[in-house]
Image (cartoon, rainbow, N blue to C red):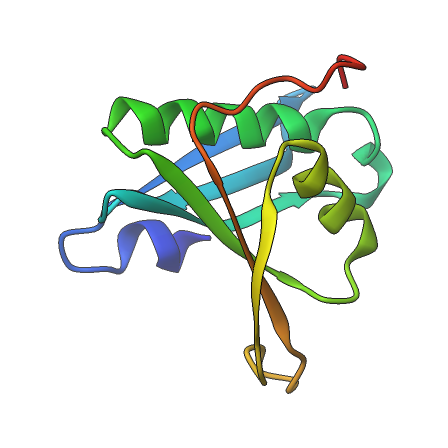
Length: 125
């Protein structure tokens, strides 16, 4: 996380964080260097998953992207990360393409994107 925000020349990365009892329980990193923003990471620690924290971080990052004038938002996700795939689909992200051998362990990534603004799903998740 530190590298993504602080170790880039002219960094265009912005973070959103979730705290509980003054402890970091989740965060997301957004790159707004282009008109199509890119979510670099959304991470929620395991014991706090399925409580809407990832959704809140995703919505916060999308609002920042809009404030920077972005019309679309994209991300990459592991093909086997079913919970994340479900979350992104719920917010209208479409499956754009598979990127072969994207991760250091050789796993493929799925590129997903959607138009801004994001809307809270009908079930209020």
